[in-house]
Image 1 (cartoon, helix red, strand yellow):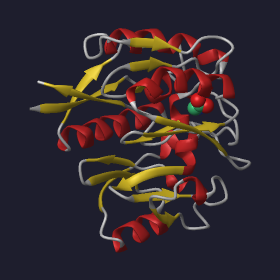
Image 2 (tube, rainbow, N blue to C red):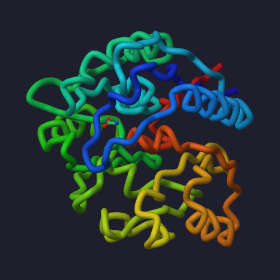
Image 3 (cartoon, rainbow, N blue to C red):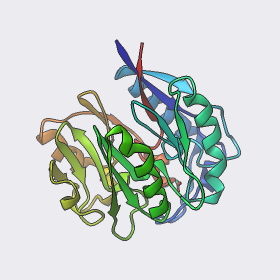
Image 4 (cartoon, rainbow, N blue to C red):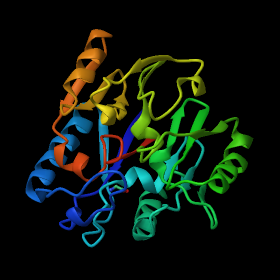
Length: 260
Ligand code: GLY
């Protein structure tokens, strides 16, 4: 039997001091963010995830965005080296949380820069976005770590205004991607069908597929409708405060498949 563990972390009370790259700063209601985060954790539990809480990091405004700290595949974990200097310390407690689940743990080393949000993995295919946070050196390091295990690792160029690759494209069913064509070209993904986000909702491509269900923000109703019309089962969450912090539903967990 295998289970899915979701490594998560609490919201920092300093969240409104978060890194912002493409968004204007807006007030963040931390109490509301905490309530929304609890609902998100409930959604993960409802979809069968066992939660593993990483050490709290209240002085790190972006620390709830644990996805950026690590990339996990069946055989090993890679600890990222975040592109934003303010976030570099976040990775060590995630490495600690991962030690119980993966024997082999690799680290992206300088001059490599990698945010986990730039990594999309589907089976043995891995795409890495060359964003403001992730560089080509990190892609080379990932290739040398992962190719011996049979993974392909391809670099992806992204359009202006996009923070991470997974802001631009995520998986919503076995052979189906949700993608914003202004931010990433669909030709990178020839083996997949594509649903394009509604043009009025550029941030809507970030969805979290667990089993056959997609955790999806209720902040993007037009794209949600497109997904529902395709027969995708949605578990809607209110994610307004995380979105103001330039985060999304994939950002707040690291999923780890574990054999019982
Ligand atoms: N605020 C999310 C990030 O920039 O990393």
